[in-house]
Length: 380
Image (cartoon, rainbow, N blue to C red; front, side, top):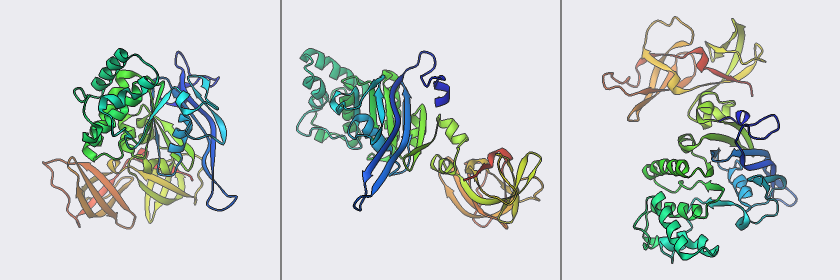
């Protein structure tokens, strides 16, 4: 879901949709390391999440994504801007009074309490009757697949089990919005992948709005309905995982979501609605993004899996070049090649592994090619 397709001309969600959470023109400044200086962590960020949506805030460390999440939770106060949850302004509303809950990188469970007692803590503080608490805890344990763990001490749990308890504890009070701050980052790779699917399944079952912070593009692509890429305190692109992967709007987005061969090249000329580019001595064709002049320096990005690798033959068509294999990395279902183009740059090529086809060895002469539409041009 692209934000433009969710909004009407009034800035409200189209149709029967409604905003679960809004951050309007949020700016956050922190005191700098020298007296009187400031660090701009967020620069007029606007975030709008539809009720029931799973949105991922994706970006490198220090881009502002966790700061934005903490402002939504009420753990940080914005320097400028407003936060709304369910249409209600949250300015001055303390964290415990907001209809949101948060799951952190580490589970932060009470070590002296059992699994049951940890999950039941919130309802008990809210004065929920004991019978209702027992039923709700049972529902949560079933949801996170920890039935039978009620009396287990949390110190006896694995990392994945502890994070499931933290998730159950966050969900038992039925928050309107669940905020998740890199909750899987401390888990090993295999468990992290399993938990990604678990979280997606839980979201589908409950329909609760999830806002998920991560620096892991695979997590965002796997789970989210919509991804917002952040860089240096701003949202630089938003859209569905497929939109962002296939149509990145910046060089940064093309590199951060997936891998790209990013080359700084010169525009030679326009030609039949396209561009002729100089790739360090080689001439390549690309689609014309507009507002580009001959002689101008631009960036191009080509996904490794969009480059075809073949045995060397006589180059004859556009974007077809001879090269030499520099390195070969076997990745199970995939093979990654580093290829030095003759008279040009080095590029990465990603191919599916096929048992019936021998791998190219390092030093092998090869030919690479790519389609014009897969050579994305950025003017930055």
